[in-house]
Amino acid sequence: MKDDIMTIGIIGSGALGSNVARALVRKGIAATLSTRRGPESLAPLVAELGGSIKAGTVAEAASADIVPIAVRWTDLATALRALPAWNNRIVFDATNPGRVPGPRLARRQGSEQPAGRLRNQGHRPG
Image (cartoon, rainbow, N blue to C red):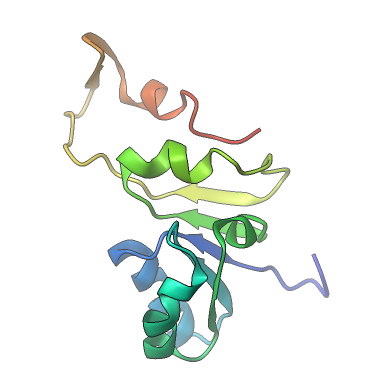
């Protein structure tokens, strides 16, 4: 950490990611917002947000000290595939499946597994 100020990088710029960015702007907290479409595609949103939010690549956002992941469940593996290990960064996963599988079990390829186990299969770097 530089000067004891933690950096924030948001992966995903949809409803959740953009609202996290809005909340940070209201508090004057800087963050990097990213999307798979590249930083250029965020120009209108960043202009609307103003203040302390800048556009960056997914890799730039992922290199921050605190990383909210706000992508669709179906895009999670693709979004995280090329990223390095998290290495002591704070990461919180705000993904949700498009269809809620129920409180205790989720189906995957015809078998039933606890939902938490599905989430932890191959979707995290390092």
